Amino acid sequence: MTTSEASSSAAIVTAAILVIGDEILSGRTKDKNIGYIAEYLTNIGIELREVRVVPDVTEEIVAALNALRSRYTYVFTTGGIGPTHDDITADSVAAAFGVSIDYDPRAVAMLSERFSPAELNEARMRMARIPAGAELIANAISKAPGFNIGNVYVMAGVPAIMQAMLDVVAPTLRTGTKILSDTVRAGLREGDIGGPLAEIAKAHPAVSIGSYPFWSDTGPDTNIVVRSRETDKLQAAMVDVKAMISAQRANRN
Image (tube, rainbow, N blue to C red):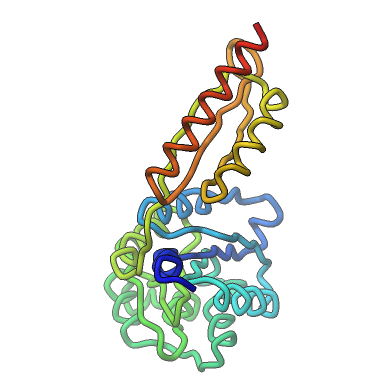
């Protein structure tokens, strides 16, 4: 590996999201966290590579978590850390890491800021059970913390709480070179530009080029999005894309 290749590799920080919950898979709850986390990570220089959704089944959570944490720089989980019997994320994470789980005095103290001793019943105390060795993620909204163990960040499923936790976590993360992006509206159908666009993609292997069809007021249209970590390569690909669009429009006329 050359010095430049090693530097490029070191500049890439990757992540996965593990969404946990039967309610997501059944369609009863519509996930609002994936898109938010994806955009958030992109903006700070972390590349989201994979998303998995698993049911409230310990074996499924453990298997998915172990696969993802060995493959990516970071794994972010959402859901399953509430007070009910099916909130088994904390136990499953402990099982994945092979550590014990018990009431964490720090988490109990956080919950005590919101709930009276009488209100801290067995159900609510479930939210204070944290795997051994984990660090807590503060929760300014409902006080029940998330936690971080290894390269795994365990967060709430409720969007507002998850977002607050992500704000706490973000400054602690290692980030890489941000992916730059540029978009051009083709004014053409995706099928009209598929072939020429493939040729441009071959000519610019260090650049990601995607086409996204949509329906406009004038009929079918396509946005072409070019992404790269290097400004000069992004600009060079965009020059070719725009030239191709102009040529295709001219041919159509």
